[in-house]
Image: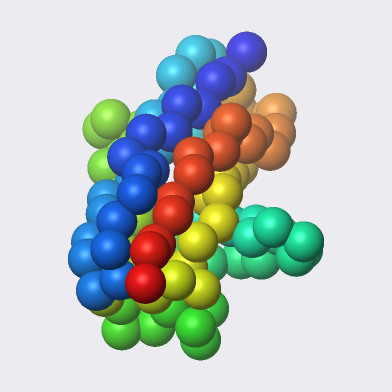
Length: 120
């Protein structure tokens, strides 16, 4: 059993910054990918940023140059540094990890979500 716990959301003014964290715990053999998604009210969940085991990153066009994803394999944690926040960044942010629980078993786990609200 693996659990993901997110933290770091909150209310911030436009132009401000927040740092989200997502820590995995439980029966972890390895983590093969870490991803941040977000879902705004009335909209579909969208991919924000990804990082793989080699450290390669990808970002949605809407956050490029403002958000930075990073991972700490020793702590089984992924971060999302969000700078120059805009009201349109307001959403519930979810982390997702592809976790190997042993040498042959791989599963997808989601965090519970953390609210980010950016006021204008």
